[in-house]
Image 1 (cartoon, rainbow, N blue to C red):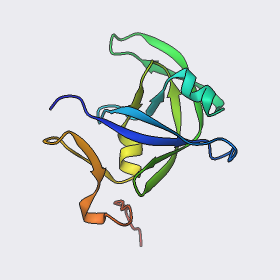
Image 2: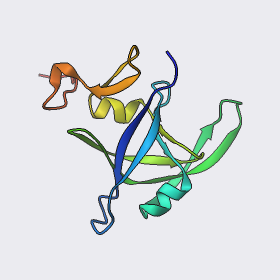
Image 3: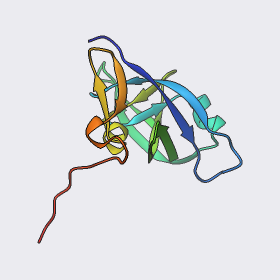
Length: 129
């Protein structure tokens, strides 16, 4: 399938004086979270909420900053999340993808809104009676 990148807008919802920034993110459905480089966290003046332990692909454990809150925008979709601060590039994991009801077209290598719910994001939930 190859690598898939997409543009997303990032905003600090606690500070409306800061303009949102648009970044190119690697889309990784095998990853869970949003990962951002340190300079993006600094630009958006994101607060460190805690440290989280991550395991690298080489099996090494390390502590990294978890910052937030962070608003992600894609087309007519938004979500709020935190982000792990590591690496030199943006990585968009499965939680924000699912939260915004985005889909990946492997043939065109593009990310888009779910065509079955193009106007309003949808989610699958359980209803207990």
